[in-house]
Image (cartoon, rainbow, N blue to C red; front, side):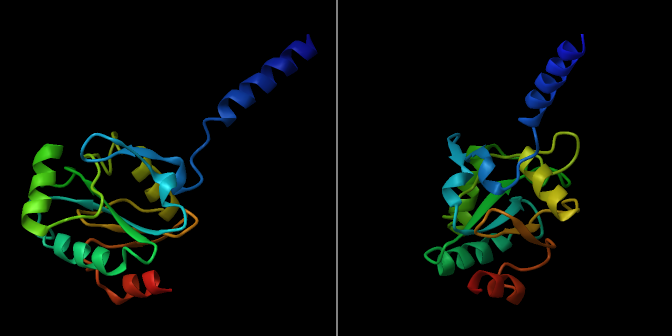
Length: 175
């Protein structure tokens, strides 16, 4: 009887051990704004700025600064990933297609944009659950910025009002 109980306990632990929380960014596969899978493991060795975005926000002009930052550093192992989210006062009501068109037409965005997700609440996307848990924070508004190092570890978070070209962000990229 003891050996049966022991065998069941080992099976139970091994099944649930596989469901442990992701250790780094590279364990996620997400959907891009065109509906394709985007495996974040392809970003190994790059610094990543993860930002939640919105088209109808007072901070929406940050798209311009984000694109400029991306153009300046994209060839230096740096990438920006944008995540449209409608969590704050319905400031991102559009479909993925509408959001992509808006970003291209108004700001010439070329950095990868992902499919619209939720960045807080009961339906928070697993990636944002991981980011906020790692930094012991919540997403406070559109355009909050998470910095992820070349090993896939979250190393910083900046408020939505922090501009993309802020010295703290630029020095981290250049470091």
